[in-house]
Length: 118
View 1 (cartoon, rainbow, N blue to C red):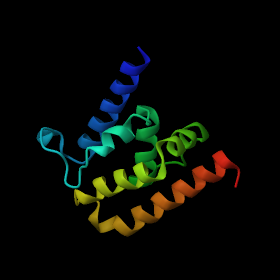
View 2: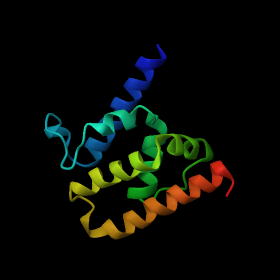
View 3: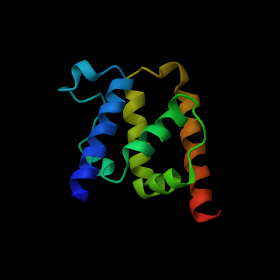
View 4: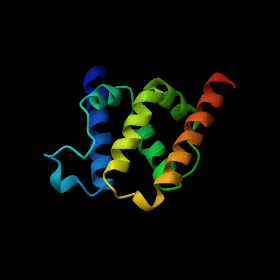
């Protein structure tokens, strides 16, 4: 049961990202920059935290909560960076790419300091 819940959450998160990027109508085609390794990454992300982190980085949303910081660190820096690059590769956020990369780094550092106490 837990595995199906995790898989469903990962699927919902992926659908949310596709919808946000305007790619839902082309869901049968992988987004530019898509790598199948991201599927393994998504297994460590919850739907709730994925949306929270996405909103924080791409839509100037509120700070990521402590529990979601824990999920982000479990997700891992390579997975975090890869997902950010995939989203940026769509071109939807091209005018703000530099700002988003800075926010992504700041969010990672913030979460690491929360979780690891640095």
